[in-house]
Length: 118
Image: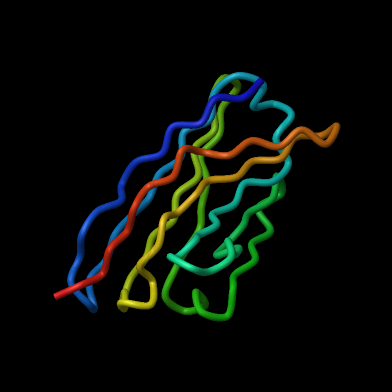
């Protein structure tokens, strides 16, 4: 089992920045993928960015050059971050952390609201 705790969402003005965090505990030694998804009202959930165990990163086109994903890991915990800059109203959504383990287990965070508005 893996437990996920997200933090860092909120209200920000257009052009502003936010950093999301997702702290994982439990079977973190089995994690090979950590990612951030988002879901806006009336839209499907989409991958924003991901990072693998060997630090390979992948970004949605909308996130390239504005968002940066990173992670910190030790024996007992692993945290993935999403640094978001130059935010626009189109970035408004609930952001979900996702982790995948060897053996096909997958876990989702509870979601954190990001609202970009003046």
